[in-house]
Length: 490
Image (cartoon, rainbow, N blue to C red; front, top):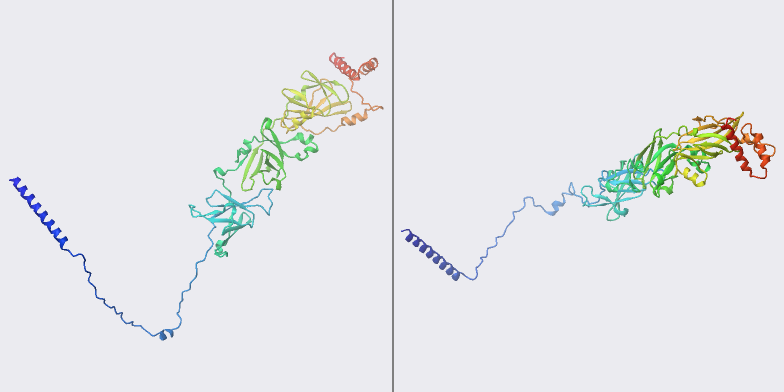
């Protein structure tokens, strides 16, 4: 039953499909090839007559209008640069010419800065690709249609803004944008643009990293430097480096040193120093030196300090190592130092190094000590004082840093104890030159210092060996005999 019902349904659907197919073909066969378009009749529109229509003569009698529109073409105006330009002050290096010192400017949020002389133009360009501030400095200050000029004031700058339109006319409107003052701000440095001197980045630790040490004034050069070192009198000595790279500069308040050839060199501020970084000693305190360090363009100044190093006092009791033995001549004295006999004369220099006293006798040795290539306590034999039968060898002992000095008096008699005094001033007695003038015989020969009771013995030696042995041998016999007699209590 169900099967027959399904068959009849299928037959009915097939019949409907055949009927619709026949009707479609019949429509396609009967339709016309062209479809006519009917023409619409034109309907004329008649506007209503104006209620206020008047003749032209009547309108003319009304007269001109009460209000009129006036046309103004668009004109350029100055941009507001008051919050765009940053003023970082002027070049205040001591060697900068006051009338030519550069003024430093930057753009808000920019790492770049430019410098111009007072009254000179600084050109800007508009850059729409900038994220916030759309203005940048023109590369190499190439001329553009927008520029500023500035004049320095006290901690600020007076800025004038100008712009040129397409006709070459200079625009100075509105007035509040054309002229304004900018307060001075401290320059900030960014990452890669940080200032460097040689291999060192500049910050508050620069001098410490350069091994700068300060002990005070160089007392040795003040007493013995002479005309060659007169410019170093009353100056603070600052040492840099170590060992073979050690060097020193001498500065007073207001003096400067330029970074030349990888070293600080004392200079007189002027046009010749403007192309170098400049270090200026601004203040000397009891335990502190204060410096101002300027970069080449004077854009940045860094304050630096050097704390006074611990002074090495003059060695204690070194003078006791000098034991008087006798006098070879009036100006040559024999001393025993650590079991070794040495001849000492006024103006001799003895340096204590590697545990022993070494005489500085050659120009090379003296220059090495003066330039501090070799260091150590120094015993300078100053002079021999004679007064009322007393004889004293007077000298000065400098400490290693040459910032401390002690006055030493060694009595020229055996067993006497040297006397150390703090004052380096000479004693108020006759010096060796005056004593020699008073004790010179008629022939102009200087009287020799001979141990008491030995004059007769020495004369016999002279007569016996006269013309047979050199005079210096007799001097040697005299000294040895005097020493031998004293050791045996004679």
